[in-house]
Image (tube, rainbow, N blue to C red; front, side, top):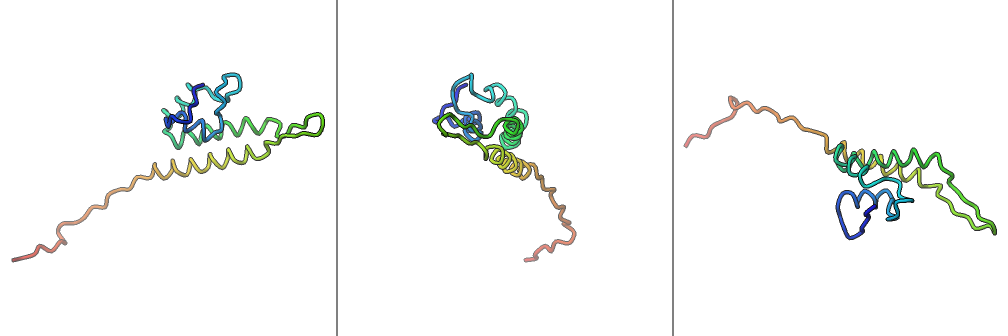
Length: 116
């Protein structure tokens, strides 16, 4: 993994948005190659949407709370909701990019030509 918060590459921006920034190959969720391949194939917004959806599907199957001896607890209850929100937000941006307007044909016959 190569996360660097000073590098604004698409790979690092995606890792930051996903929260996959540990710089430890044993705890990273996605490999650099996987992120790069998805972003290259789908573009940044649609690719990040797909990665967030993939991560949310995985996270939904994981425990969302850990209680340690002594009563200390950690909760990740909102991570699936946030990943799904990110996926929807990025897909909406991707959909906006995909909108192509068809030029309107203008009839020149109806145009008035000024006379001097």
